[in-house]
Image (cartoon, rainbow, N blue to C red; front, side):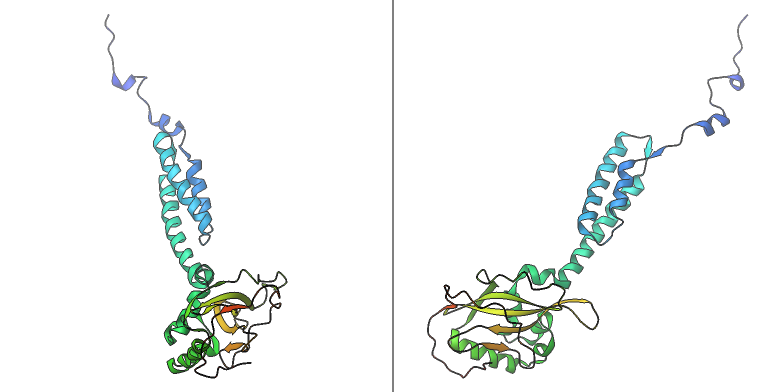
Length: 252
């Protein structure tokens, strides 16, 4: 007797109740880890790790179809890229630019007599000076030492360790290069505004150290940078060629 097959009684066909007993897909651990790295949104190292981990999570998801979390991985990558770009830009404008590019960028608008450039790099009385007033100071400097060429952080006078970074104002010892040679100087850097407590990272004052003709201070109305230890007597303070003085410089 032939056996009559009835699809309604086929035991191989999954029933409605079997669908509810199938195990749910688990979360991909790498995708979850990528999202965790992107939680501190404004920490570029962590967000970069989150982007890389998110890419690894997508690769893992292609191999392991039983796991889920693709949208989590893509979210981590998207948030990580945007947060890295935004936070790096914020760090750059709030002080990283000043540290990386150094004192040449700070002094370039001064010796170019550029009031708009001064407002981007300086604060205090320096930004209130007109183009004519800036030009008057640079004329005094060039009459002594020739044209300004560049500046770099001094390797002769390292910033003393006892200089507390809790102070709003710190001194950066620099070496200024002029047409006639090199000369030591001090730059006063305001790290944060004492009234608001916000980071500023702007220059406030300059002292050109010249034991022979006298120090030059910029600008008027701004306290000079705090004094650093004297130069090593065994090292020359400057290596300058004589310049014919065309104007009497301001000394203090």
